[in-house]
Image 1 (cartoon, rainbow, N blue to C red):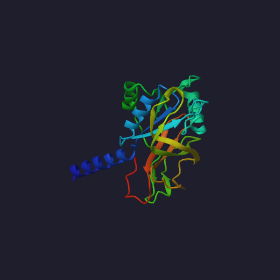
Image 2: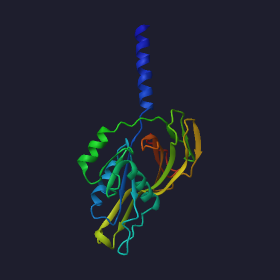
Image 3: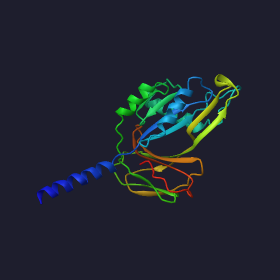
Image 4: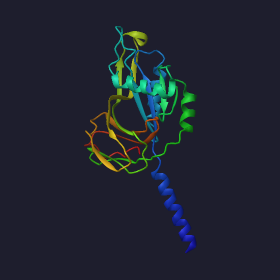
Length: 237
């Protein structure tokens, strides 16, 4: 009986540990107007294929100019990078910048640095995140929440190819993976379980739900791809 109890305890411990894990959140700040960004864009595309990574591409606006306006540039992307500047770069905003788990940044084209940062990342899910089967709501589980934890919803296009006709990358084809097209703060997480309504992702789109502490740490994260009418896909959570 004692042996059975020990085995059962180990199994329950393993299940609990699995429930507390989640994908690593990787955010790339990039632009089609930046000549040093394509290698970082390609690396993000590779990371997006990993089942244990939520890879998001944020196209900032300050590279936009008369020669080329990035069609994926987003004011919210620039604002998000500026917010990270307060805790990470301290006035040294740059592209391509890759932020891992909201707490470490590296040059996004430096493969060895990016992979080393990924290896060091230890994501823990203080808040479980689960999408409903119909993709019309998402549930955040109960847990210990720091004051001011926010809930962000990122909508992104899975893949887009663009013929760049001006600027530093003129004449080249830009291939962007998981480029964020909408980023919204949809609430706060105070530690109680709650369900939030969402618009399901359309064909060729993905959604990522991020629960983030004011200090940048991610407390929970999951992503899912559309369309809702396609065979169910397992969320990355």
